[in-house]
Length: 68
Image (cartoon, rainbow, N blue to C red; front, side, top):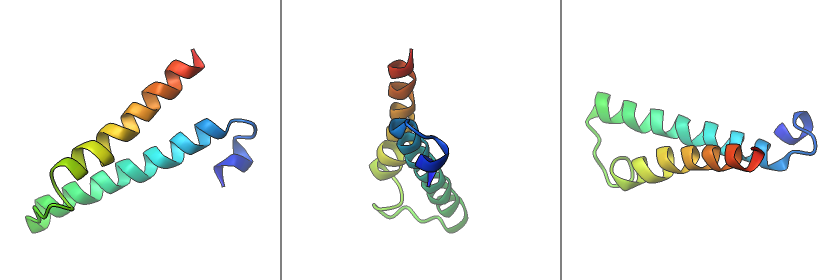
């Protein structure tokens, strides 16, 4: 859907969508850890830090570097 609003800029639409999903998933995981004390391997640890927080931030940095 973002490609309709961000015409001709596929990378920005892709990074925005991935970052919103990743940061939202990180929020859900952290909330679940705090409220339910759920430290399951699929909820905490590398899945949280690497794929939910680090990867979206890395993609944003790469997109900004690509633009400059």
